[in-house]
Image (cartoon, rainbow, N blue to C red; front, top):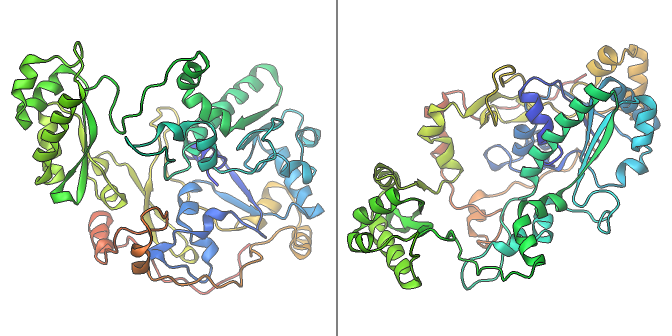
Length: 454
């Protein structure tokens, strides 16, 4: 859903031509949640927010049934035309479909195959299905994540998926560079489990040498006199504050009334004890408690103390700093996607020779079947119609007739705090504020009647 799709999106942002091949019978799960305004439409599989965000700038989507021999033949013809094939399935899926690396090399000898899965091909866990939440736990990252006095916990997001994106993108570039020099293709197999271990390699190395690992301190950074999150706005919001050098230490002590401590103590040459650390944290808590978050952050930063309001999605979309940097791209979606105009995070980097630009919205399921088959692959109209008739190509999932339940968003505010589907609040006026920020055309539009698509 993420690790194998974002690398192609990164490349697409900078100009690569990406053809998305999707099983139209059982399409990507990212299509099936976080709907516009919280409600699924009739063509709900075209309405998923994560899908819209992850697949922008991919100009083509081909809906193929690879269990159909004719569909598999279409796929192999596509491989022949492409530089890189990016696979995001468990290790045995391509084998079962008779699309192994050896089979792909028969149609394109210098093909580059990049595959990613939870545990890679061959090891003791290779047949285990996994998401990033599980590899986070397996690699030991979650052991490092806890508050004092509590058991370890994992984060809310599939943590290893996102660094995997950049590892995979780098490996794709390396494979292309290698082929430029040698003329040879290759198979790059990325295990998110191994990637997660690499992220905390120093901890595993210390453990292997018998070192006693330090007790976890929640938000606290080892050696820093202060690093944490503190309530502001009378307890409604939080501010993250860190002291990382002498200038910040002096500024913080002067601001929150700890001049006495600053004058007698260099916390780097003589670290604070637990009582002193508590004194600092308590003083910051008291100072922040009744202040407005943005005002407090501005005052801290004027004293050279790194600080920021802990933001949610609402804050980010209206953040002035992100606005000034042009962080968001406004994308206009097809009426059948139900989203209208939306703001998505822009490119992850600025490049001089191949600057990122918005070229296309996320494609709909099988939207470009006809164009790819007849233009890129050179099939005749009759051959294309035969592929559609046989079910090799299509645009409607097997569950198209299923009616997604309509939810009351307010009810989701009453779910347990541990639930990922829980809402903090329902803000009826938020769309008005977004339109004030991004323009009156921002937001959903009424879907047009279904029409035939090639």
